[in-house]
Length: 466
Ligand code: ARG
Image 1: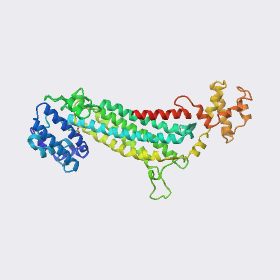
Image 2: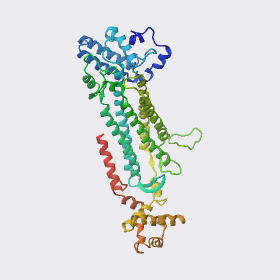
Image 3: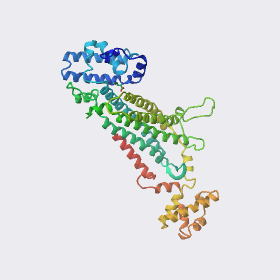
Image 4: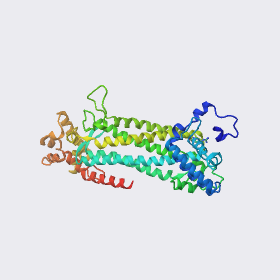
């Protein structure tokens, strides 16, 4: 079998150890459909160049159709001796079309330009599936944001109560990165929209084949501009791997949030039974496994990216066999995301927030201290002093085990006495509500209900364009 591919100068076939090392059909067979599509386009290019007669082309296309049927039904599959998907498919074609005709298809192409083209075709198709799944997740988060209405929750920095925010604002903070991931895929697709077919092994082909027609038949707008680059670069595969890893990280951040909100101590959110798991020993347990798996799988998505980058780092610039290692990395990422995203979206779409608890917790931990300082600024106090005065209120309340709104009129009059008249000081109470606090944050991008409504509308119209 191997002698069929490169018999000429060899006196023996590969050793069994080499064959085992070299073999890639166990992972690259999933490129078979794209390879057959490429072969059809290539056969027509050979026909146009006069290297296949019209009759031969017709028989070649019929043979490729039959090969596709056999692949679909499982009647044809790689065997132990096939090095890669291309080797296997050539064997399958020859079995159908005979040695003479089947042996003509390889003219003017190399497995180098072939495989470089196939990985692009395969990734482009799956990037669209993943983009669709990401938009579904973004939409589920937007729906939750709409359902959240004006519910206020504790906004945190360093995990400490910082300022109250709308639950919708917090949820929408996860929508934007996901939409950027989709935008990255859309943008990446413009760059990967070029076919390397016709590059040959590295230098192009001598047979007068038209790469443009082949590119168009395979769904590409362009042909790669340089045959060495076309066969040897994998930066576009790595760029996809980055977006996949980034998506994993974005989902992991949301997972961590959900896991914390779902603890007994927080109790901000309840997960639906259908999207939670139990314990084999502890009957009371209900675990957020989807979020944990998402957080965990982000590690392997990052690993796939770094592994691929390390593979590419030291390569001389034309095809080297190292490049075979590009595939498992992105196949793993795609498999991971395509299974993870629908489950994750289901969990997000069905989670139930405890609005009363979120509202009750929102102002605690002196989360309105910034509002006091900013109220003072509006009343003419320089911020440096306003910060100090508000801090003094916190100190006073904390010392008594109280919250800011428990301070008396006399307390405020006393703390503010160097800056404000006594009749004005107690009016600070008007900002000591979460509603007042969030409504006041009405600059573009802020957490006021009006701005959040505007934000949700922008996200929805962006989704329409993606
Ligand atoms: N299976 C290889 C890959 O996935 C393509 C074959 C190239 N082989 C070669 N000897 N040039 O990259």
